[in-house]
Image (cartoon, rainbow over all chains, first blue to last red; front, side):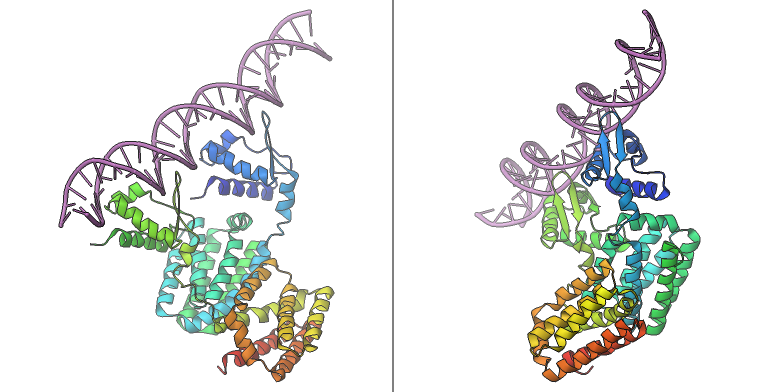
Length: 219
Length: 219
DNA sequence: CACATGAACCAATCGAGACCAATGTAGTGA
DNA sequence: TCACTACATTGGTCTCGATTGGTTCATGTG
């Protein structure tokens, strides 16, 4: 369950990305947002307070709430860890980590990984699939049995929880692509279960290349 | 018959495994747990006290009890990051980063790197050489121009500043080995200046293998 | 007596709605 | 056409009741 602020940010990201929300554009009224996000007005107002504090929106009594100039700049210059950066890091880290995991994973690790794989395969909806996808990649990293590595992996994943990342994935995700990802996941997990480091590294790299292509457009 | 704390832990484990309890998620109110676990509220509160003491949950009057960020990573013990772990991570990360840097480094990056290399070559003493060594590796990572990567690199380096690491290096460092390292550094920087990704990756891997051998004994 | 139990109470927070003041808009009349 | 009025809309504020973690205390229970 998302809180009001996250929902609101997602809404704004979507609007700016779609181009319907240019600087100065009028946002829905608070009472309208209450219905759209089915959240109490107090929560909506708290979320807007934060956005106003950040300078993203401007509020005027009797007129409404409007996007500021900053909002646009932030949208097309997400300097703060862009999805491209994240995918670059994932491509650097995850393939060798998968190879390492293939060497040192325990049966319990493989069981956990398989559970994530199967649950992801059984998930039709975006949110559920994304959740299991993240869990699967994390479980593979855990199987490498290196605490420092997990620490760094989590640093990467906190960046991955930024709103821009979520809306980007939501925009580019389709049932067909999810099926494709699941097939790739299956290949990775098979390589892990076969204790095949090279195979694990290669299939992971192929998968992430595919994800990067889908997320960022053909490079 | 289980006591309240055990039941509560079982409940949380189930929730985290099922994926419904992510960090920050709100868990049932104390009065609800009283019914669910059919235990007196005092016992529930005592169990929650322990969980709060462990940093697994956060309680707020009027709001509720929430899972903390730590809740997820309590499974894999914090692991006091051994030098072996650090070298494993460096071997995973630094070679591909060097390859990336070879592609995207600017001349200014290469200049900074060269300064570090030369200063290290001119350092006879352990402390100075170590300092320039660390600066060189960081400068190479900086040349990859990826903020998130630098973030993770710094996570790695904070682990590297642990006392055990320092004393290990001091014990195993000799003038001869430092000369050897400097030769390897030179090879890496040459590959970077030649814009040779494969060469940079290979020389970096060779170097780190050598460092790992010296630090940890022949593997 | 020592400890657990259950109930009542406290303080912080939240949610729903009423109300206020600023603003915008439609209608009216000269 | 233009000034004026009445009404609707909108962000800001306030209050009241419900919820929730924290605390106290009488009552069992061994």
